[in-house]
Image (cartoon, rainbow, N blue to C red; front, top):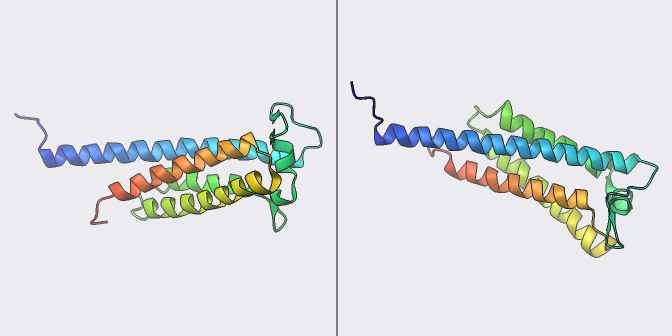
Length: 159
């Protein structure tokens, strides 16, 4: 009995594997983003200075995390980050079998990226101080947005 795969079956298996890898990568990046945002949230409320995040005049997480721009309508930006990454983690794990999830992931990641780019603008041109935690979060959401875009584009068109 010949157990070789037909080209169509092989292609479908390759797509399923790629999809699983993309969802896993998004989940891991989201978890990492939650951790980075949680540390940033802790620094937002901390009373003491952060030595690991203070590198000269231009890199100081405490200045950024305690500035007037660190809250939006009274909600710490880092808390919004924890919630946003939590949403991305939920979508990429518990909701991945839903055909609408790639679109939702792309939308949520794009919104998060737009917000992170705005905050990066504030760091660069308003505060003129960089936060390593914030830049790490920017890298996480950028990668998630790219992977979500790849996931959406690779989604079969009949869905």
